Length: 214
Ligand SMILES: [Zn+2]
Image (cartoon, rainbow, N blue to C red; front, top):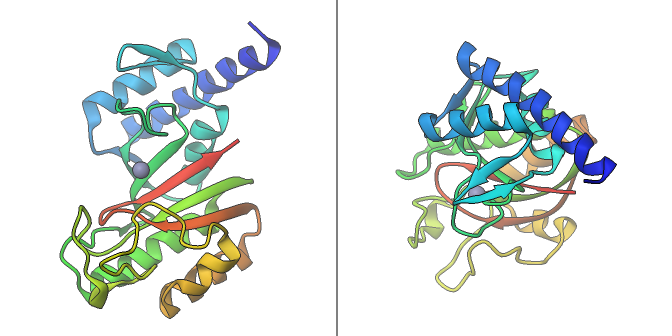
């Protein structure tokens, strides 16, 4: 095993232990508690985790990002590792449904739900550590539904592809985001220049998908 792998395992163990402590304390809330707590405990013991029968060594940035975000606010995680062959299987992405008391839930669109989602996303951006990220932004209704009248972040019309960055780069993507959310995102990133956001895309109704690139 290379020195780099050993460093990753050691860092993962340390960070997973901190996350188990945060989960016990209640600052880290886990929506699928039994699955995620088992994953964190396995990581704390071994530095790697079994997902769908295979051993996965997540990049150390994954757990590190969560530890850093939890230094400032409580956080609700929808899923840490899940089988299915996505970046969530490899530990390269996380879904956050609440941060600092602000929830993302636009399944039934309302002004209050929009405001809470905007606050949640900007709070996360304000506290993200150094790194490169893709953001899967919330959108009303989620699933296969589209509700352009209630879009808050990226506009999603009948033909708009989901989970694909419209312009393939942040500088152009952000111009498409609706004004209130755009100002909040730009403001948060002006206050915290550490994260580099590479692109934005429309994702689901009830979380921010944070893709962590290494
Ligand atoms: Zn996701």
